[in-house]
Length: 262
Image (tube, rainbow, N blue to C red; front, side, top):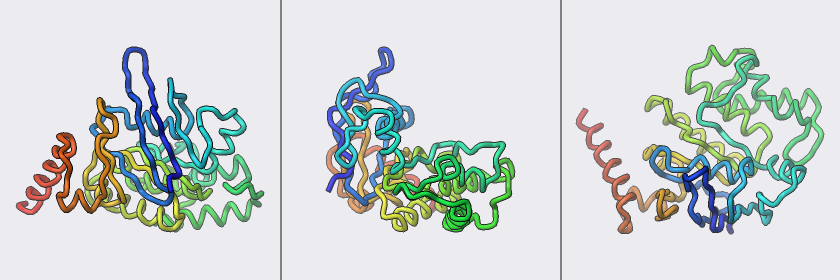
């Protein structure tokens, strides 16, 4: 069953027509990876799903609600069930890791279900979230003391602490080495299973795509979503005739061969 429906979505910035009638269904509980080259409009799509940018026409519908048509208070209520991991992590430099992770709950004092949270409950949730991402005991550390991978983990802890139903990831492994990227990929899989969430991951990293995805959607700047296939079909080479998809696959195969020969 589709939790997120996107229909005939258009978005332009001046003369730059980024989203051109995009249609997409994202199933409840799945991890959908949107694979595309850098700068093709994938991040613009995430902003549409979050409701922080309005479309020129068309709509994003989540759990039956058309996001762009919601009033501010309704959008705020709907957004409490969504969370986003930004590409750079977006941690507050002046706050400790624990304060960063607790920020949403400290500010709102409520969970995604609307339950009022005591300070002791927030502290417990911070501990649990950091434990989930392998940063147990780092509550009092400053972001400047963390490596790139640890910053992504801290940002992920801040994302999952209020247990949203929809998780959005903007290039989660960009700028990370291969080992750290694998750790982040593993955390994305673990988080999806722990929360039973619907996850949307945008990336140009093929290894991230085939590792975390249930399905892979190929984002084409002209045709929008040109192909959708299962991650297993991509791995097995069961590919439709899509030039962009084939270029991604050939690149993945050449990388695999290169790594074997090193």
